[in-house]
Image (cartoon, rainbow, N blue to C red):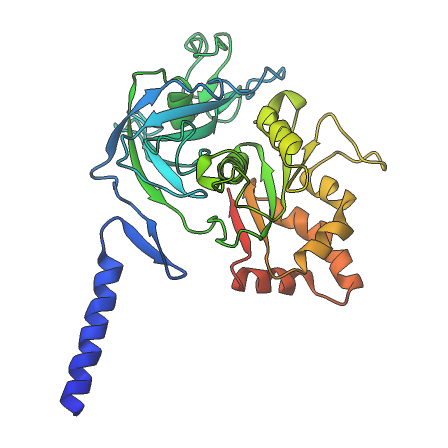
Length: 352
């Protein structure tokens, strides 16, 4: 009997091991999700395609060198299935900072829903900000060497540093081939509960996963019932922080969702260099959150409310500054509260 029990236990372990080793899949909270179908040693060669939903350049000039954010769509031929909230890697041809070819792999959050912007399940879109620094600490173009990028921006009279991967992606054109890896990431996955409340906090290109959620929840056929109503019955509330109004991303889509689904979608922008609050303080994400602090706190008490945070590293600190004093009023320690939400897989953070 003991021998049978040992054999059974061994078989169970073997079966569990087999599940873990299943290629291209990872089990997260009991659910199989696509995972590293294509690794860095065998990347997939995708092709850039035109996007008829969004222009390649999403933003308008702001007066500084670092103004452009682009929307790039790649055809993966159905060979790179992914979920909302995941990321893919891009391998630029290089040379990178160290002169190595190809360049270093760079991860980007996916900005399209699982079916893609064209709902064909064969494309993936990225939202990428072009990194350009002028007369800074580092430079990879000396005076006289900087040439116009695809948007026509150039600084030939300055020492310029251009991010290798971001400038490569932003300069892509339809027909170009791109080496991609992935998908990866389990932190930012959407809950399966159609009545969940989703509070989305994003700065800049941190909006990518939030846009992927909203496409599924409010746009795609995949998120609709047979009678045309939406499967999602909760509240999705987006807070986007950007420096200038010219830097706001996907505003056309947010307006459309708000007009069609006013009870299910809300959005607020924090434009730090153009807006101030009643006290005259710059309007950062936490400043905007503070305007709705009581309402948001009430929403967070519901066990089906999720917080998603993506963007600059300081965001978490800002959120703590906003809700810490309010939590204390209710005899709750914010850090402990956030920890409990994390434990319940309701507090999702991806910052850089």
